[in-house]
Image (tube, rainbow, N blue to C red; front, side, top):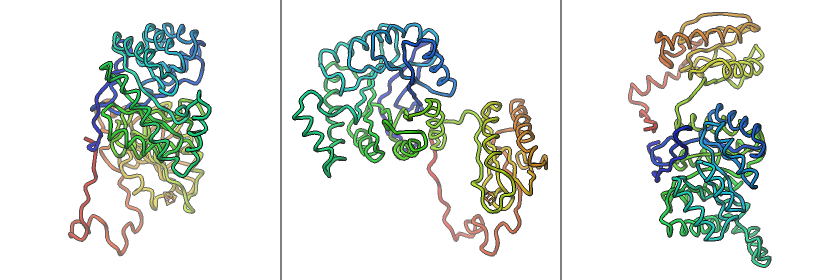
Length: 418
Ligand code: SF4
């Protein structure tokens, strides 16, 4: 985006996996984390490969125990996406993961705070050219050892100043940790500061972007189940990304990690931060004009498109011909439902009028045919719009285009990606 907050750049990966750049002018990347145990090698490899196939740029694994880091060489051998080792309380796990060939280390300042231990990890990473994410987290910034101090800090959390207080602690923790890295002259770093509160995430990342030039890993921690976690994540991450803040994202759901990847990518597509891979489906919300079972149709079309179409064809499934054409503007393939029937268009050309029970199969057939034509160079994506004139489309008020031409309305230029 033209307003993108410029940061340093780090590189994650190697020759075999390909290198994913984070920060600078690199595209915003999507990360996720495996839910299973790393020591359960076959399951872990299957999960990582499923995430990579869904579009994850980077996958993180937790390595709390020696048996987890011991599994890393085999996991790295059987996967082809850059992997990050999340180290919890034991810096030795980081050293073991680095030795195994991991591509990035995540350290939580709330969990590893011994300067010598951090230095040992920094030195090992420098030797192998591996970056480190310094990730503070709302859940691990409160004092744990000193009971009195803990009570005092927790008390602050429940005061009116909670928001500012949490922000201050998170930033202080980051600064404290970054001092150690600075003293070691190690800058192959990205940073994160996660909370479950969307407003806190927005505020803290804005402040971090103002203070540091390290690439930012965005995330809302323990966002909850997908149903509500989506809203929480989109509000926080969408707001920041739209402002140009954020270089890599991880959406966290209490659900299949696959959703973290697909939703993260969709967010980046919507913001124009990544070029879409695969088909795009738009559909009307339905209203009293509907005369087919559109929700079932949309669900079926979504699944078959995801399975069978590779190119970013824009497909519209609209409930009627009244508002549908305008709403399907720009679709390559579109169906407009009528009285238990569907009229199918391919780039403005009407190609079929079929019964409701035939819509899905025929729509997919047209998508496949169109994809083949694009591959053969006989058609271009997004070249022609659906051209259907609905009854009385404009009415007495006149069209917006005519008003602009007459100078009655000022033309607005919308900011676009670089
Ligand atoms: S396309 Fe037709 S059915 Fe769908 S919401 Fe618009 S007016 Fe209603």
